[in-house]
Amino acid sequence: MNKASPKIIWLLTAGAFFAFFVFGFTDNLKGPALPALLQDLHFNYSLGGTILLGVYLGFMAATLSTGFLADAVGQKAVLILAGICLAVGVGGFSSFSSPVVLMIFTVVLGFGLGSLELGCNALIVSLHSADKGRYLNLMAVMHGMGSMLAPLYAGWLLAAGGSWRAVYRWDFILIGLLITFFVLVRFPRADAKKSEEIDFKQLGKTAFTPEMLWYYAAITLYVAVELGIASWIVEFLQKIRAQSVAQSTQALSLFFGLMMVGRFVGSFFVERLGYLKSILITALCASVCVALGIFGPPQFSILLPVSGFFLSIIFPTITAAASDAHKENTNSILGLLFTFAGLGGIIGPWLVGIASDMAGIKFGFGLNLAFGLLTAAAALVLLQLRRKTA
Image 1: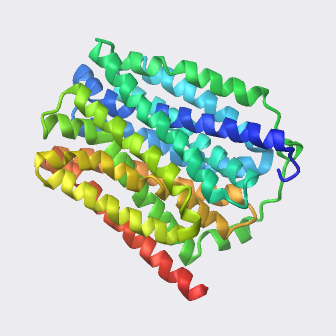
Image 2: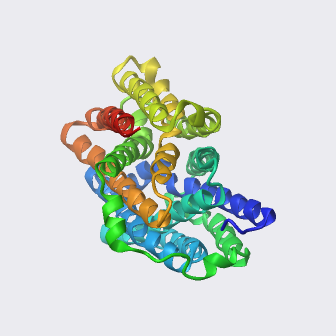
């Protein structure tokens, strides 16, 4: 990848950025569509949360397996596979009503999202190794843009009388463009063959050090809070704050819009402030916003989407910090890291749904505060470990 021409580097960078836009758009159709799905199919919160769990089972499977696939046969194959899985998952999910069948297709959809997550992050790390923290945050801006537009689009379509199925079906246009781009674009020759031997014994030693275990904990807890908010904020605002469909979906859009802004702003200071210190500070600030937004007076509800500004940099910055310590088998290491991110995707939306059925949506949604504070705690431990080894 280091031998690629500047033209190829910037073309692939643009492709990764567009792919992350599609990633954010597709992944975050579920929040605004979930209330309509629950009402249409007469599902309770637990069943809705369990169906969403399928997305992150697939995500985990993808990140665990496609990291090794990327090291073995190249990133192009992974990114094309990602697009095909997105198409199959969206098509199936928007066509059936059985909870079991819906969950099967959410697993396929999640596999596509996980493959895209791994493929794009690994691509950016290999293309821009010197300042990967900046480029990972800028790529995440595109994820935020897609995530911001998804609720606006879905809210408009639902308010106009469209179904939750139609919300997903129009996504085929973006997915088709994604597949076409990665089929046609030429990757550097090194990606067309096995680029590096995988020493599984050495990989096991480096992937499960005490420091890496805390990175896995940090990314698990972070994804739990981000997706716990993204999946259930619309339902929370409608049921607890009595907001309309338009107001609640706009709040979700604002959440992702501020994530986009936060990542753009963060790209200028994460390298200077330091990766781990940046994660600690922003996780604490986000937790304060979540606490006030849930348990404060109604006018403080605006702080729930504001939390997205502070959460924004955490995922790409954890990725940059973890990859700093691993110059070999980077795809495999990132695959393991993103597998734990998928675990967070399971824990967050699913536990919020279960707890909401048991004790009400306010209590269930409040679990996101615990996830945020634990993310900050993991970052603090990592900071202490780094100082001891410095």
